[in-house]
Image (cartoon, rainbow over all chains, first blue to last red; front, side, top):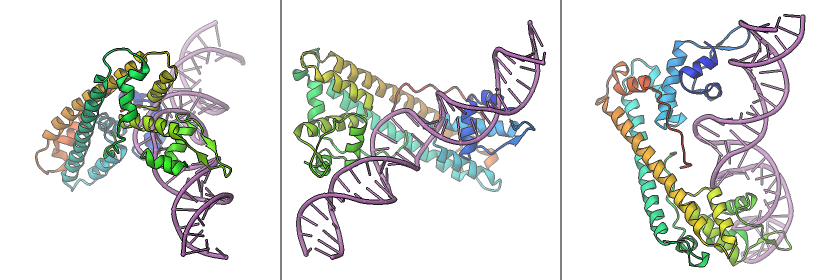
Length: 142
Length: 142
DNA sequence: TGTTGACCTTGAAGTTGCTACAGGGTGTTA
DNA sequence: TAACACCCTGTAGCAACTTCAAGGTCAACA
């Protein structure tokens, strides 16, 4: 099948497929006489796998790891489990960050209960006076 | 004061300051005879304001809006409140997305309780079979 | 036969908010 | 005079794509 059909079946665009090929996530397919890319079922399976991982917000690197761990039929799925556990930790960490951020924002929002002069606005005062409390470094990509 | 001192006082780097100038978030300062940038208190206040907004994960565009809304001393803070409310909505939306994602990941993780052969691993099966359920479009930048 | 339209090709540039050079100039101290 | 910390400009890199430009291919229709 051609790239457009593959993309449709995996719910993405042709550009995304070409991008995955360029970055090594998807192996280069065969070409037809007219230089069009020609894909088979294996490609579709792999692309769907990748898209599913992306739907779970995994990075390309995490996906790469999974794909590498899957090539050796002798190996067990311990590595796979580790990658997933680590990813779940990222998500947990990001949720915690955002919940904390949300609390800060709510507190700031409380400071101005009605429309008033700029000078009196508690939000602007808050934004001016906040201690640029060295914001926690990102440990996640989310 | 010179750029390095300004940056230190606002807890960022000189590169970041120059970047803000280039993108129009910070106005170009005067220059000394040697072409060094020369900043005053007003610049520091503005930079701190920007850094505080960034610490709250606002985008440059949101910050731009706030800064624009602040220049007219006649106006009230209704616009400011709106920007903040919209931002809080973004954070709420992102938290909801991630919580939902976390649930999906936990469910997937359940499918493989011990290290086993790749073929049997419920996680890999899950990743292969998941319906690429057109993942919800991002409405936020977070 | 010509042409329209849908599809394919490559490569480069844009997105966000910086960070990290490279290659130079300036200024103070030893 | 040299070392060193600081400043300057401009460019490239990150992630994961998206968009655009400029063109090639192919089937169908008048």
